[in-house]
Image (cartoon, rainbow, N blue to C red; front, top):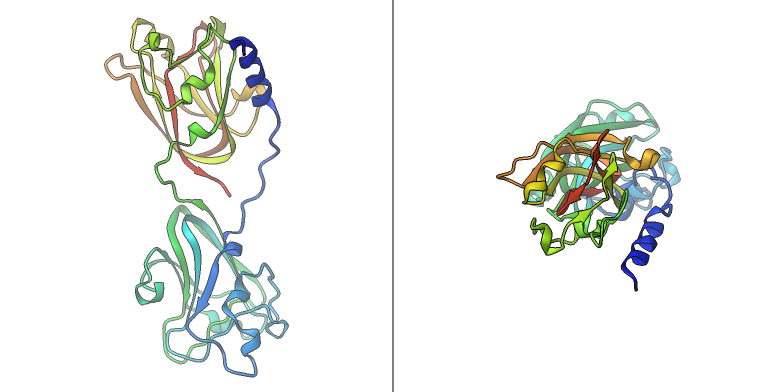
Length: 317
């Protein structure tokens, strides 16, 4: 196929709409739950651990959508998310009567099953949740773990939960998420297609043919579509290694969900200041969220060349 025809088709495919971002997914719904004990008959049928992750926030215990342990020392309930996630918030719904039984419960998050997971990091303490109400506990920096425990320390305690909702995202594993994306740019120079910047090759020698390149545009840009919203923590860019490396000076990295102005109006992560001695540059974006990553040289006529763009982060659920 003619290279220029291939590029045109690639742009058409890239510009297609993939839909709007959706609200964060309740991770608990796909997990598995267990607890220290099950309340004795005749209430046992209503008190199973999985009732707290059935998606039903009905707080009437008699309706069969809440958990219940026996009266015991240090009762606990545990959710296994089946993989490690960075947890940003947990919402707990208390029972509609006897709400004080949950007072003093602790929320723990981590990867260990020592002491049934109750030795993991304490993320919060439930002081009180009114009868039949829900309370959300937010962790601004996120807490990573596979297991979430609700644990009441003390003797002769009973633990009941009517719903536990968990929100977060997969803990970043060091994978370069750019290689699974799709690219486009403001124009094409020769055969230096935009996807060459995400081919996994950091070769900064322009003549080797592994860099993207636009025409001499006013405010030239390159855009990566990650295909879904991500939390972006860092971006690595390999600049070209020859005299033309200075062209990238002052370029901006932008991240967001909008395609207004081809995505170039999204929030700025960084401004590139080149170092000829170190063409491989790392920029911290501190968990910025978005589907699109743009590199734009604003307000001047320039060629935009990128020899590699790597994006490190995690998809938002």
